[in-house]
Image 1 (spheres, rainbow, N blue to C red):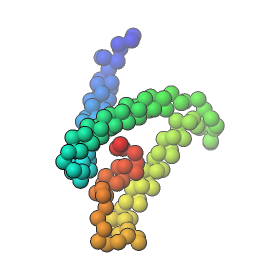
Image 2 (spheres, rainbow, N blue to C red; image 1 turned 180 degrees about the vertical axis):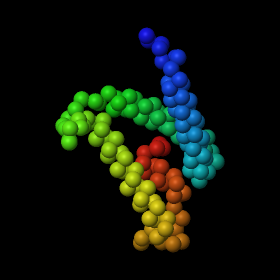
Image 3 (cartoon, rainbow, N blue to C red; image 1 turned 60 degrees about the vertical axis):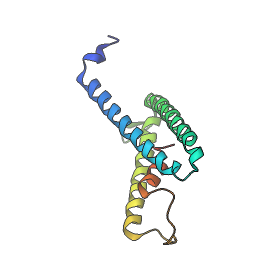
Image 4 (cartoon, one colour; image 1 turned 135 degrees about the horizontal axis):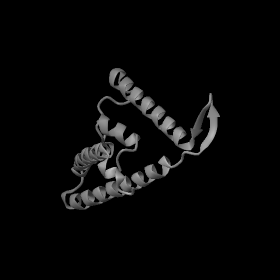
Length: 139
């Protein structure tokens, strides 16, 4: 029974999806670090790149551990219209609302432009990476 998941196609699909997601996020971290490290003096680049990659790995492991913890938070806190609401449900709801707000804000800024910003100043990060960092996807 312990290894019954090995014969479950859904488990393999989930593993493949998570593996692909980790590869994409890893590549994105490398691209982001390359952009940021390029602004440093040549002598500091290798050290900064190494620290950035180690930090990204530690952050990803910490987030994985926190997700494993959040998944277990299924004890009902209260009931709304006959539906039991747990702490996990609240975390998912708040996270979803944050992502909707952030996406709406980014779409609005891309259409209308940022208010009060100087036109000639270039941001440190491209818009896509600023949104990712605000959502906590990168170190």
